[in-house]
Amino acid sequence: MPIDRRLPALVAVAALLVAGLGAWLLAGAGGDARRTHVVVDRVPMDEVHPPGTGHPGVVVAHGFAGSAKLMAPFGDTLAARGYVVVLLDFTGHGANTRPLQLGDAGDGALERDLDVAVAHLRSLPDVDPSRISLVGHSMGAGAVTRYAAGHPEINSTVAISLPNASAARPGAPARLLLLVGGLEFRGFRDAAAQAGEPGIPGHHATVIPGAEHVSILFSKRTHRETADFLDGAPGGVLPAPTRRAGGAALLLVAFAAGLVPLARLTLGGAVRGWPRPDWPLLGRITAVAAGAAAVGAVIARFLPTAVVPLALGGYVAALTTITGAVLIAYTRKRRTPVEAGPKRRAFAAPALIVYAAITIAVPLQLGLTHAVPTGTRWWSLAVVWAGFAILAYGSEHAVLPVSVVVVIALVAAAILGLTSSFVLLVAPLLAVLMVWQAMWSAVLHRFAAPRWVIALAGSLLVAWPIAVTLPTVS
Image (cartoon, rainbow, N blue to C red; front, top):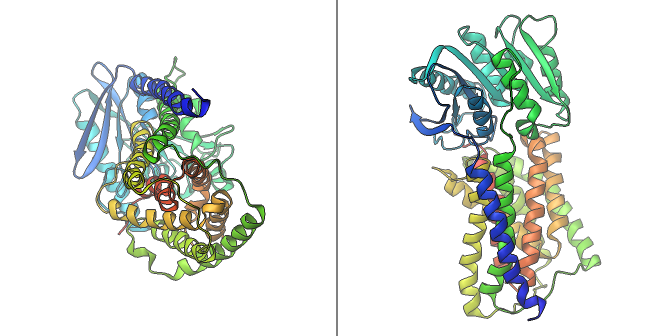
């Protein structure tokens, strides 16, 4: 049998093996701790209970665009040390359907959510209510630091990547550990140094080498420092904080590999080869995309993008739509011939789009962060997806360079104050997603998928994480 005919079957077998390994990693995460999901006063929370009773308790708070699931490795770490852990979804995040009001009103919502989580933790029968501590990351670090400063009954506080030192003050919180990544922006490192100045009793700052704003959450050093500080002494072996993320990554790889046999099955045997770059055309399309994205970044600033109840979502959708529309107009005379028959295409389109949703949503939900759209996220997802689909349709001949151009335009817009500076923190993740979309598009192109199917399926890989992680706002 020719290698081209055997390849889909071989890839399918490899994908199943990789998926099995990923599932094993996810199934074994957390050891023998008992997990429960509850909703108290509209605040969704995940509880992690080690065996026994009389445990100290910890509330763990995520950052902007995070979720309780993103912080799950801290539940594993602290439960292994004998803590009962409550991980909450802040207003506007994860499974919490209440919209967040950005600014001072948002800070009030975070304090309310922490009040609910702390009260619930104290009420659990296996918790010693006199021994409650807090851990938070980024936005959550500021929230727990402010909360502990106003609630002296909190035993200890760990602030990871604290955005602003004003959340802490001399003597409050009484015990505060500040952790910051060595690769984080200077503002975060300055905040940790200021709030953890040696002259402030009970405040300590530690730099986690080689970590940036996201990877600090999965650093062994971060988890070790957090657990030792809460215990007041060094402890023993801790579970690997990368186990859940590693399992999710393997599932992503397995689903991505599964695209090859699925495309062969749904699109038939037509194969037109991998896309070959037409360098002159690629250069022209990239130049047009750069100009369109630059203009789009400015225009999007003045459009009513706030009607999309998703922080940054409307702006991103406007920028990608404008850039994509210009590219479609520029390339309207160029159409790639389609070799799959009409009946094949009718079946392939929904199958490939649903598979793209499963590919991105299942691994994220099981091992990384909350990935099931709730409330207004569903129609926000449709808006963001439409923007990226238009961009993908217009950039068929130059998906990767156009993706680079769009990421650069977003970063520039954040630097110039046209959109939120939060873009600077997530730009690397967005770049990875768009590279993945380019690879996905190349596979579908090889199996003669129609241009619109390539655009819809590939763009969903980028739009879905954006729509389920960015906070819903009012």
